[in-house]
Image 1 (cartoon, helix red, strand yellow):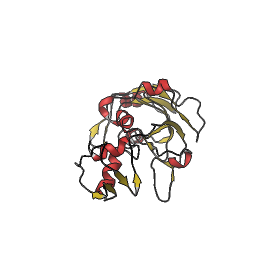
Image 2 (cartoon, one colour):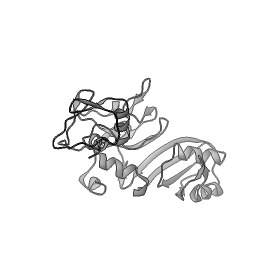
Image 3 (spheres, helix red, strand yellow):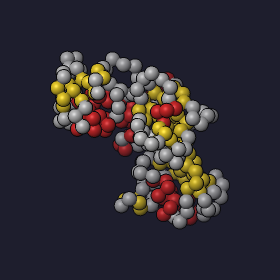
Image 4 (cartoon, helix red, strand yellow):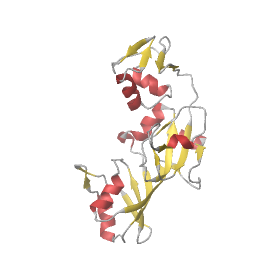
Amino acid sequence: MRLQKYISRAGFCSRRHAERYILEGKVRVNGEVITQLGTKVDPQKDHVEIDNTLLSLDQKNVYIALNKPEGYVTSASQPGDKTVMELIDINKRVYPVGRLDKDSKGLLLLTNDGNFHLKLTHPSYDHEKEYIVTVADPIPGGALRALEKGLRILGAKTRPANVQRISRYRFSIVLKEGKNRQIRRMVRKLGNRVVELKRIRVADIHLGKLPEGHWRYLSEKEKNHLV
């Protein structure tokens, strides 16, 4: 098994962050510092450590839904900022699935299951994410249709989306991709501005009535749809 995959499966962090730890020389295998990303380990024989923490695949997976408030960074650590980890009070190490901007709020998933993380973040799985968007100026029907068909941002056209009007200033949008600050960039392209962005669904997992700043474990039904 590749070292970065082992670290992710052990629930220490995502595979992408595992690669960073390896390149920074923070990972030891059988006492030896490893900096090569292609390194393979035997889960039955090798001992893997990060910052003197011994990892193991014999751990219970945790799946959490959080209603993230505005002002929190979707990161395990960010000097000078409040992070979503400050809202989770469990004795297991979990990490965010994907991202939700500091100035956005709503449903954020966290886990220590690397496969679950991959299934929800890799574009090939086509999982939907639904948002409620409030804008500064009344949004005309033509602008909603443009959002639905796709707009060119960051050098590429966005994929078609499902868009529904809620009021003159609010609409819902369902995406199957997650470009950096995508909805805000799309709205700005139309000459408007997002004043509130709230994610209410990821795949079949709904925010529901979970209070802002609170979290819950996913139900068995929710997990079985994705794991």
